[in-house]
Amino acid sequence: MAIHGSGTPIGFETIKDEFGLPPSKNIGYYRQTFSGNSEYGELTFNGISEGIPSSGPISFSDFYGKRLNIVVNYFSGGQEEKPQTAHQRYVAQNVTVVGELKSRPSDTSGSKVIIHVNKDIGSNKSSETSCAIRTGNEWEAGTELQVDVGNEGRIFGAGGNGGNGSEGSGSGKNGKKGSSGLGIQFGTSSNKTVVNIASGALVTGGYGGGGGGGGGHDHDKNSEKTASGGGGGGGAGFPAGTGGARGEGGTRGGAGGNGSKLLSGNGGSSSNNGNEAFGGRGGHGGDFERTANDPHESEDGAAGAGGEGSGGAAGERGGDGEGIRVTGEANTVTINNSGTIRKGISYDVSVT
Image 1 (cartoon, helix red, strand yellow):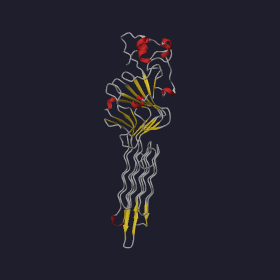
Image 2 (tube, one colour):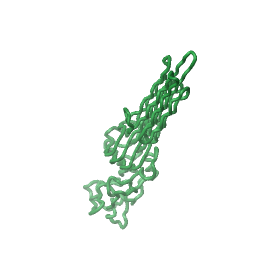
Image 3 (spheres, one colour):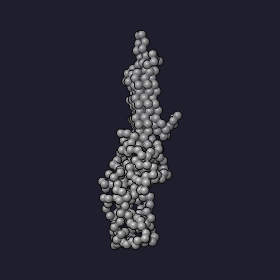
Image 4 (tube, one colour):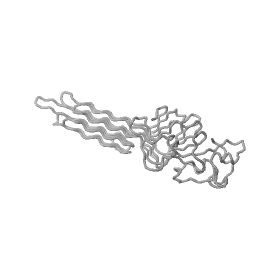
């Protein structure tokens, strides 16, 4: 429970109950510096609680309105795909209590919980609502929740897979949607979740996969010619979208290329069977950095062609995920962005 505000005298026991007992009951021990300390994920403030001096004089009055701070760890170790929610990670004790004078409280009401991200975190491909980092919604009322994305933090939605090329003269398959980056599931208008995105940080939705190419067929008196479509390219994200397979039947187009975290895969090549049946190329997957007519969106595949109007339809491109999804309204979160958010922010939507 946070320490009460000014107006009522404050004693050492109140401070000790909130932050833990320092060695020799020395109030000066609370005057600590955490700048650059990887154990705390480089806090956005420098003391045991925001506003408590980290150097110089310290007094009981400095503790009015202050609260225990706990950091949830998404910064140490290697990159992760679809990790536990922050609340699950808190319960699993993958946290540090700032100052390390007391244990993690089971009830977070009145405490400040800082979800600190400073490495690559990815989502999965289950749906556009699937987010890489999710706060969880089980926090007790009165928890002050903050998400800090450090300057080496990158939160990615997954890239959508490319659509397969047509089977023979049929239609190309549609590319898959990307999933999303950061999911905020806690906060009210009177107790907003705060999101701080540092310079150099990235929060992005996954990009959609390209559509597969359609096929073509030509029927002559003495010959039958068939061409299959190329596969669509995978969209950028983490994990990245995989390229669609090239179609089977007759002359075959190319397979779509796999995406990567920041770049999409190319669409597979078209096919030509004797200049009489033509399979369409696959569409490129979407990304931010591709140099093309529209570098921000995936592409539809191309339709096939053949005699007697037998060309197969192109597969459609997959849509993109979103950078940030918030289950509440816009007034339940404050976003301070000094980095990069790609693919937008949506409110009053589901997070999975």
